[in-house]
Image (spheres, one colour):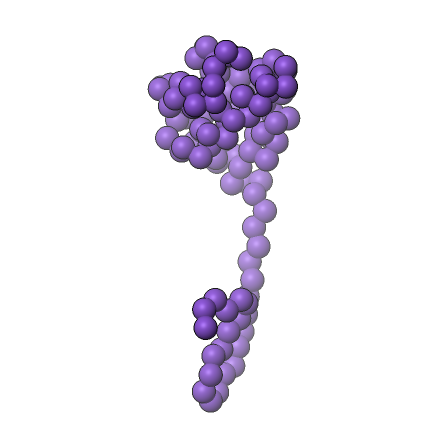
Length: 113
């Protein structure tokens, strides 16, 4: 299972409870707007969190552990990560260089001496 995505979900759920909000598909979709764009996926995540008993009495660590024990979460996380990859901005840079003589031929940021 993707521990980063699991941690983000647990942290978001914890923050929602901390702010006195309820755990709904809408609140999750709003909180995780970078990753969840689909209402169906938000509903499925909300239902899974509810079925796992995620509530305002739990610590963020307990929520993360409960998510890790779920047999359904790996598939949901795969769907979330796949969806995020579709919406993630990407940038392709092309550099053409001609170099003669001694010295460095650097495109972009040179790291090191």
